Image (cartoon, rainbow, N blue to C red; front, top):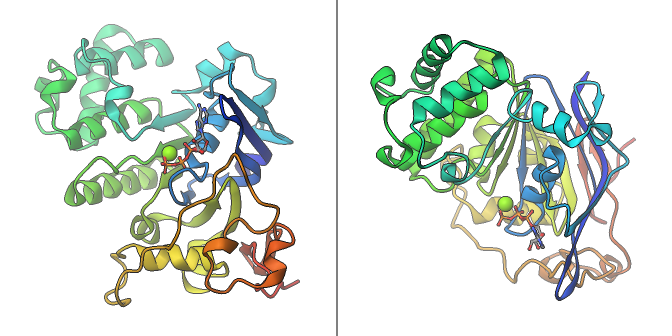
Amino acid sequence: MQLLELEGLHVAFSTDRGEAKAVNGIDLSLKESETLAVVGESGSGKSVTALAILGLLPKRTAMVRADALRFDGRDLMALSEEQLRAMRGKDIGMVFQDPMTSLNPVLTIGRQLSEIGEVHLGMTRATAQDHAADLLDQVGIPQAKARLRDYPHQFSGGMRQRVGIAMAIACKPKLLIADEPTTALDVTVQAQVLELLAELQAEMRMAIMLVTHDLGVVARIADRVLVMYAGSVVETGSAEAVFSRTGMPYTRALLRSVPRLDQADEGPLRPIRGSPPDVMRLAKGCSFAPRCDLVEARCHLGQPPLARCGPDHQAACVLVEPTA
Ligand SMILES: Nc1ncnc2c1ncn2[C@@H]1O[C@H](COP(=O)(O)OP(=O)(O)OP(=O)(O)O)[C@@H](O)[C@H]1O
Ligand SMILES: [Mg+2]
């Protein structure tokens, strides 16, 4: 059974320059214990999608519409603000790129972690403190008990990110949404944090939606991949299918543009030429056409729909041979 199901998500922002179509009708789903990586260049709509699922987009400027948004059998669109708030942090954990946005600089780490136990899990103060120490220990912070008295600024960037993860998993959520959880970290620490996420997932059977720029990371830990471009899904499927039988020229270009830890020598890195389209002015054809080496006249006629090109694999490109 699917844990998370999102169908036909559209998000537009009203801005001074007009309407920004950030997400244009995407579907995604996630099963228990599964890791879905959402990848794509800057501005492709990854964070907006994550925030829409969490109900965290600004009400004043964001117009959000979806045909369905279900989590664990519940219709998230029917929940009140209060019910959503109760669910976030408890059933759905969140980790953001900059842990300082989720940590309060004037409260000790111990206070912030034990508050979650007290508020969401109904623990006494003493139990919540032991729980907090266990959590820090679980995310690999040495001398966990003593460090509970420290403030966020007394931790390194990598450690703060671990604390952010500890907060996110405090209630053993069924789903963890991690938006670029390692971008601010150096490469060694990045690898450690990802390793940690993978371990916690195996232990807790939680599903992870991992938003990242980094396809090298994806190849190592994702079961499934969703590639976004200009607010649309242009390729999706099992990580194995997307990596080894890539259907969309954009995904191929993305793969060539980043170093991959899982492959020894793929030739020189090649940046993708040009830049992503302006979401204020999306053309009617394939949004990647202006940057695509394989572009043909028919690419400009309309946005190609996602077509099935394998058992668990879809791509949106006129060159993809659809299979039944
Ligand atoms: N609050 C907002 N108001 C107006 N436009 C927004 C807002 N948030 C996002 N956008 C626009 O929506 C589009 C998608 O943004 P989003 O943050 O989802 O990108 P992203 O894929 O997460 O990129 P990055 O990799 O840089 O984090 C962008 O064009 C962005 O400028
Ligand atoms: Mg983002």
